[in-house]
Length: 322
Ligand SMILES: [Zn+2]
Image (cartoon, rainbow, N blue to C red; front, side):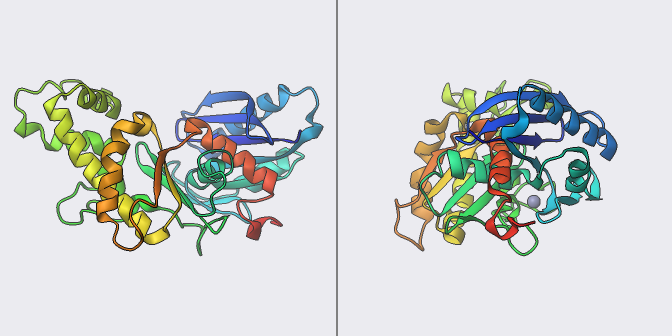
């Protein structure tokens, strides 16, 4: 069976996986990243790829290397045009890796790669119009339209996180705007909803932990256990999530929207509230027709999707010859 190396490059660690053509990961290697200088990151990426290749007795079945990286990426050259996570501008990631490895190298945005992975091997399988949204520190995502990953004019399509859903009364987003979908409905957004309600729950112990140790999981679990403060935050959170999802339905009209990321791990607890609310807010297409489900590939979607890009010879057919 053909194999590809799929690399998930994040701000704090890099993971390289050997991915089989049926989507299974047969081995993985990870390294933490502390230094965001280009050479240090390149070295870590090369090391993990070398380690992944080292697990294979015979490399001849490997068709290529796919890298999912944060930032705006030119899918033709594989250059990172701009990455706020790394503080990079015009870094020729693809070119440098091609010089090092004797294999085709493809680079794509990490969220687009995850979308391609979930589309090909997860909940998007069999659909033609599909959206993945990852609810983590921020909101990443991507769109498949008519069976093809949508990149847009400058590879920026699918950045749902920065459409504003509460421009007058929302939280300030990392991008500087007010009330972006990401500020309201990411995992971080859930924590912010809990803080915003603190004054209404003076006896609540929910936020007693250090702020940097407080995760969305603790708040979600407290809500599931019936804590009043956490439930109020959860209601505001899911209400904002539904607002954004209804917009996604209006923009894309997908058959399926898959939700990934830590906050979606209690899927039915979330979806039982969100699905009917999205239906109420859906005015453009028949209600109840958009499937909203938990993503199937979890944290592996990025690496599997990056490998899928290598199997396909590019993120989309348009760039296959790049
Ligand atoms: Zn924003």
